[in-house]
Length: 259
Image (cartoon, rainbow, N blue to C red; front, side, top):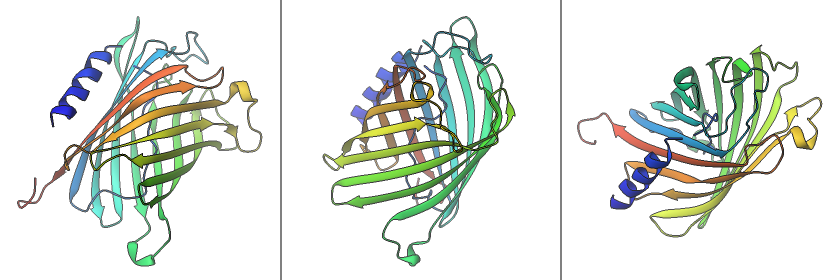
């Protein structure tokens, strides 16, 4: 627990500056346990980001994004998540900028699939000053597999924009990939890739695409807590060049026998 508090303390100190990204996370296939609630705080700091107004959206450079995520397990393979997005940008202060709902269903274990499989659908609204897509939805298939100490996960996400200044008739393809190795029972080390190639019918040219690599650590210092953190590096002109992220999650079981 001391390590957990140290990590949280360091990032709270850094967080007085983070970014326009709402949730920088590659999702695993497993849903939240029935009757359990996961509270998560996503903290992202853009150390070197976009400095210009694009499509009326405030620049991300030296901005903070704090997202509250609450997920509850409804059944053995179905959960419902809620997000509240807040943002701090220089000269604009703190703002509540939107919210999303995210139902997710997983393939039952009795199917005996060789991989973990689930489907997430996230829909919601954001203020136009902070997002070119003000009303949008994403469909996120999730495929993952653990082999010994190695973990692999693929999220071939499709984004649909219904309202805003950046609407296309074709869904955008935004793949996320994670690979990690369990260095011990307390932590794992890995790489996460986040991409946005643009509309499926015609991808953007490479400089306009978003591609980023995060070097991450996942900490399991207490069964009730989850921590994911690390720096991310943008690989194209359209991508923020340096972002620091931290996700802290706390599980709560509402039964009397467990807390």
